[in-house]
Length: 246
Image (cartoon, rainbow, N blue to C red; front, side):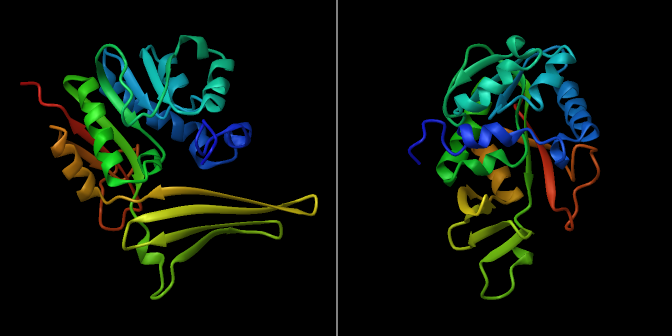
């Protein structure tokens, strides 16, 4: 990847805010902000991979001071252009290692963003980076899917998730390395466009071990932002790890 903005450069940023998708649905955003505002209390919030501000802006509107880290200037430029964007502190950098001043009551990674770190080493570093920024008693929150390997028939490593006459989207899995990619093919004005974004899927138990390595302990795990119980049938989870107060 040659783009300084990584895989979320101008072409992605220009169409990222899609109000028709579930993550932009107002009740979904409101549930997310409710949990994060509750965890932040009277303190500050740190968003890792802040993007265009889908969560940060409504959280700041609730009175929570928010600082964000993101590698993509193209995404952050769109955040800055939105109402309230000037109230968000922003740092350009790799959220797995970039440090900012001060401490926070909550740090968070939403919408599968932990998987944008494509090695176990980077994911462990992210936990340690979050822990360094947390005040004692503070929490690190991750929203991420449960790896969908049960959708893979024996001998198959590709799972399509969108098919239309002009668009095809599919995930490719390597179960030996936990590497995966989301791939997108579009026909626009008779011409084909292809885009691929790599990820590393990660299991809940693996995340718990990463948290332990960073000195954090599991406090809660839910099926989603509505705090429904996490079960063996859950396809995603919101997990909260706490930094000990003593």
